[in-house]
Image (cartoon, rainbow, N blue to C red):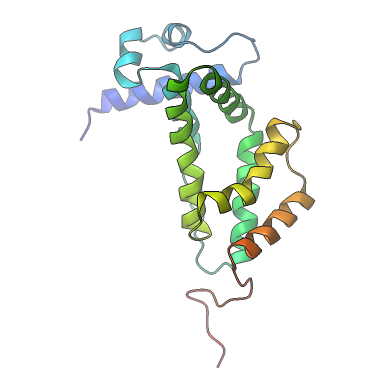
Length: 189
């Protein structure tokens, strides 16, 4: 079990990073600026994270913990609708949006910065598998990729019409029967 003081410090630093990412100052988030604002030493940041990209990745995943959605009793269509709507909301969240854009930019400039971005990308894929069902990376990209394109290239959240199309695409790609019996639901006689 870890020291509660360490846990409180980590949580404080991550919340401070989220707050700084949400500010529209135009200044990049750095380990130095974060250490100053969070009132911790740079050594603390290096010890726990090592790079600003890892701090940003952890700050985003701190916010993206499970919503408590239980897929039990939901049809495959409902599972996809909820999952995709949640991803759309998270991508449009100003802090998450800035964090992802920052990580994408850093990864393009420095190959070593790709690891935190890849680690951050594992969360939605795991959540998809838990909520909707098993999926390959290629299938996932076909279903969810347009949400990222809409948010980061078109600079608008995906429309409800696009979400509906992606739900149908997901049902088709994964060969899910939207009317299949759901575990725990009463079966017809």
